[in-house]
Amino acid sequence: MELEYNPFAYAIHEDPYPVYARLREEAPVYQHPSLDFYAYSRHADVLSAIRDADTYTNTRGVSVEPSASSAAAQFAMSFLGMDPPRHTKMRALVSRGFTPRRVAELEPRIRELAVGYLERMRERPHCEFIADLAGVLPMDVISELLGVPAPDRAELRMQADLLVHREEGVFDVPPAAGVAFGKIWSYFGERIASLRRAPRSDLISALLAAEIDGERLTPVEIQSFCNLMIVAGNETTTKLLANALYWLWRNPDQRKLVAEEPAMIPRWIEETLRYDNSTQAIGRVTNRAVTLHGREIPAGKRVLLLVGSANRDERVFPHADAYDIRRDTTASLSFGQGAHFCLGASLARLEGRVVLDEFWRRFSGYEVDPSGSARVHSVSVRGFAALPLELQRG
Ligand code: HEM
Image (cartoon, rainbow, N blue to C red; front, side, top):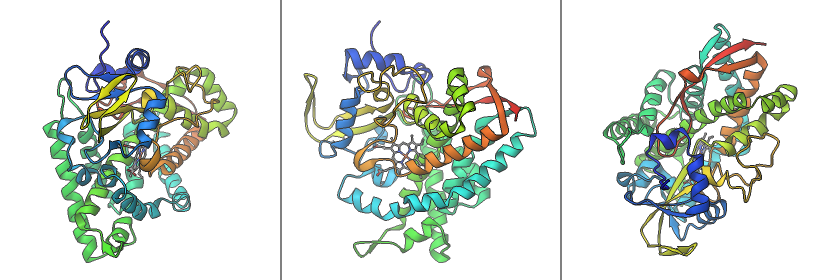
């Protein structure tokens, strides 16, 4: 069968892994026949490209879609759409809000939120895990960091979902996603204007007061940052939580390990990230011509770095297609690497640990209802839009 990797195809969203395996063996530098992109699928190639910011730029965005591939990327996604040295300065400024100490301080509040949702779930024998917890908690956490009031969050979450959703057969950013982007953008525009008049103790107010080399950030730069946080921090963590429950359910031997030893929960999270990461692909554009595995990629070409495939590369992970929470996951590329390594990695891990820990305390068992589950259709985010569970109380 002809080998095609099309990140827009619903069949790929259902299960990309057999295609990844063929890419790694047959076409480690893959060029799509009609869509204008290349893809790297082996761990070594993905890793060296992510680390090489001179050759592979972020300034044309990190998505495969033609209309998202422009120098406007830095407006849509702030410093994720920049290269050093500007990236380094901007990131240094906001990363003060994400030091291990600052993140650890969020734990009691994350636990309180998780317990609130889980206690509500305990009132019924069934739940829809995304609507009842996984889809709401990460948005609450980001919102509290940024200072988004509770009544505004449901609407923002809906727009964030629309932003990543792709219709079958559409090979670019659809109009609905453009409208959603506009709504998120205007929301933060208004929020920033009001916090400029009356600062509070949130991250947006701190950024309004912060300086890089004696210069203040502009409201538009802060707006871009808020947009990045909503896009990068929200969907991905939602997907991690549901993927963890799904894969443990699919692997009863692993479920037994967690049941016997709840201290395995952090390793359960790490293996879920490796095995079925919420971010499957990150994009770059070549600054110069590159030759790899005997193939030349011209300058100015979009290259997708398939982290989801790199994490299943047998050259690095023995029995890579087995979900095994005891394995060494240190080479996993789930949060990227190098300059753009995920700023929210420790926050995502903390949310995962707290939610799964509190879930495990309350429910001695659970079953997934696959007939009611649905996947998101996105070019890079992988996971469930709906995951119904039957809950057995502990
Ligand atoms: C399971 C959850 C998450 C996954 C799998 C994930 C994955 C990633 C990946 C792969 C990158 C690198 C992108 C690239 O190099 O092009 C990244 C960057 C980023 N992530 Fe995450 N992320 C997660 C959660 C979060 C959270 C909770 C936040 C927010 C607090 C966040 C904020 C960011 C930011 C700001 C960047 C850009 C960093 C930079 O450009 O320097 N992420 N993430």
